[in-house]
Length: 280
Image 1 (cartoon, rainbow, N blue to C red):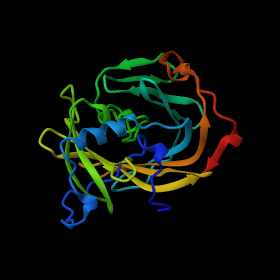
Image 2 (image 1 turned 135 degrees about the horizontal axis):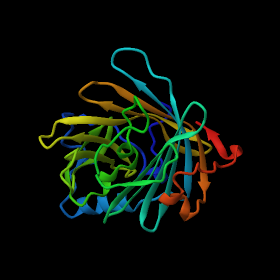
Image 3 (image 1 turned 180 degrees about the vertical axis):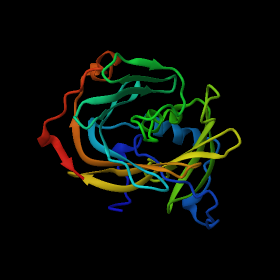
Image 4 (image 1 turned 45 degrees about the vertical axis):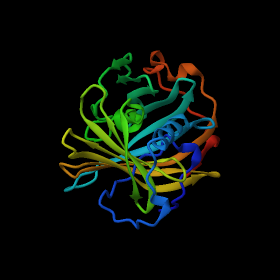
């Protein structure tokens, strides 16, 4: 791991570390003191209101790693993170071997709603209403828009559970319930106590059985900015894993609002200048 310090500017987008829910903590360690009933909603509201200082574009590769057998050839993609007064925005494009966009989505979320549009093979964007795990962004992968949009962080019912150790750091754990009763029925996620960054998310069924886990595997630095460099998505039934790796980041961008509008989704997005991308 290159670093353990999470960037304050990536608080809403840092993806997820597995929760060791049975970890034993020292009862006298104030870092693990429970939030009061008044504090818990304030911490969650502050996390939801956190934002990037500017738009960002990430070059990524996604590799499927089955429990048995050989890894797949990497799928190359582009991930844009942005913000408007209505809340966080995400745009993603998966590219085929020829460099053409084979799959794209735009996602938006806020306290009132979560929206997702998908375009495949250059077709006009289609709105998807279900807030579920959905279909993968490329054949043979596990990764879906749900894993990158993280709609559960803004689901109306998100109850504070505990403050505990998450991969060695004090974190506040919340349980979000699916507003439409879909799959997953609930998501257990943790927020770093010091930096308010998301550290983990485990998607569960109604009985609390884990369905999939997203986990940050590595952090890196682009210029002077720390951000996630590798993220895994594990299916708990098959134990197969997808590994998303960030290779380059373009920071401090200013993207037009129409860039995150579904009518533009079937058109390949213009990339920042190559000089703007910093390697991780």
